[in-house]
Length: 527
Image 1: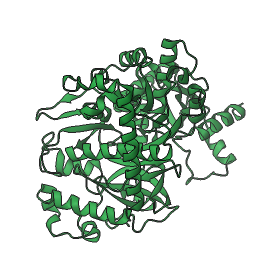
Image 2: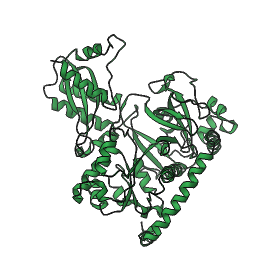
Image 3: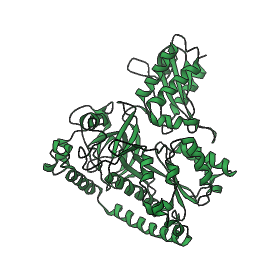
Image 4: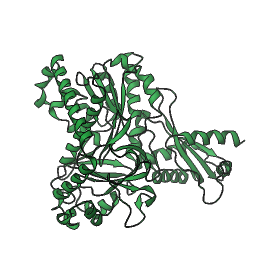
């Protein structure tokens, strides 16, 4: 921070901030003009060629003859689709954390920890220097699209509040760091930008979320916040705290300069009305972003109210029809692999990314549909595997199955079937939770509280994102478990015309609609 201390007096000047904001507005218009005029198909093909040229001397590049490959067809003929387990077992495991020149040239300075893999609790995703640059370009693109659509909304006259999660970084044997992606972003904020952002690095790196939240609330009410970015459930928790600290009723009273909410990590539809009420102003705009540990995918273009794929930041995209996958992997050795040249609107595709951090045709586990090909506008449609992430917790089916099995074993009971989904909060100050509807074979647990506790503890052990959201009951409460009478699920399936051995009780529901309907049906029909 000492290196940028001299900037503080300057950036405290209203004139300097106004100049900075004017410069941002001009840069935004230029960036959007470039996006609109560029051919996304040609841009993507150039991106792939550059990535192959850069990595041709790596182990991966030599294994796949990068120096001889000329185009997309050549590349797809030599490089199959892979997932995390394939990269970990085939290239990274024996050398980790020193992955120099294995799938990307040079030293890897960071590893983003990401939960959700079926091979263990945590994935270690390489973050190269080129990927840091890519993420900055994508962030600038987000702001450029916003400022182009809303030129009157000056954001550099105040501060951009980045609400990250646990940002403590762990130094590894080779000098690299491993931690949450938000921690990496906090460490890599460009020096000249720090006076325009909040919080300071020493607060961002506090590992204890409740302590960090309290400090953020106490300090931020005195800051000129013009934009806020984070996961919706965490932002609502922050709103509660800062209203308590300030004694104000709405966020607009605390931050009258607030112009923009940037949200990602979970679907926002069920949160929108709550945010409007909490903020208390219709002048604040909402912007969706689609980042992931593997790279930044897309950002909302306010002109279309859809996510726009970013084609020119060092990531090449492929799109595989989801029916050609089973359990997140290709059913055959030769799946159909579309690029922006061949995708069609209305088709559900799984995404594979080739990145400037050494991922090559890597299936990230997400599915999207295109509303437009040029410009490339998409909608997030789900995961290639069953998942639960209503609050950003990223639970997969295997983890839930393990949690229920652990709890059943601890309580000496047997389970027949189950369904789990979110119950969203109806009161601003009360977080949501998961509702488990479980049909037990024989008697349900005598101590249902014990069953719930073991289930919750096991999920926290298995999944770091779930654990972060459960910390202190701040953004998600302990799950609720309701026993279901034997045969009730079967009767519900019959009532929906879904009887028969090929029809299964839906195990997971990410938007909560089915969960609430099923709960209500069981309440009314179980007698």
